[in-house]
Image (cartoon, rainbow, N blue to C red; front, side, top):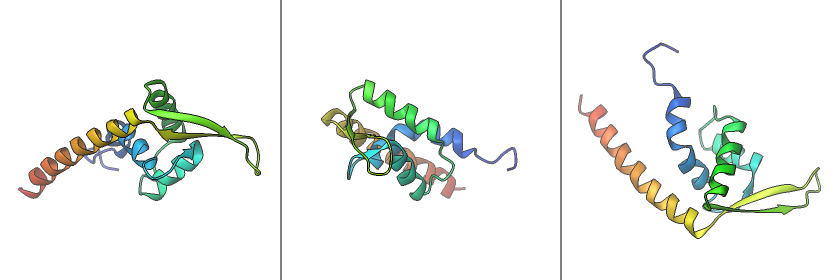
Length: 111
């Protein structure tokens, strides 16, 4: 990667909360499943530890609920889902992101 290229990890750090909340809008999920959803959505470079840390932080902030489910394939899994506060945070953050994206698109496209 050239020195002047944008580093995806730095960009992602600013929107990781939104990405995790977005991954949970349709259905609850356990940690690695959420990581997989994000990677399948195009965030291939996302680190497991970053996602797990974000899940813990969002849970402590009241944006997520959690519960444990038995697994037939190993240890019990801790599932996360959006609370009403988490859904509100997602909607606010998504609107902010879209405005920001539109502004950057305008700047980059207007060269």
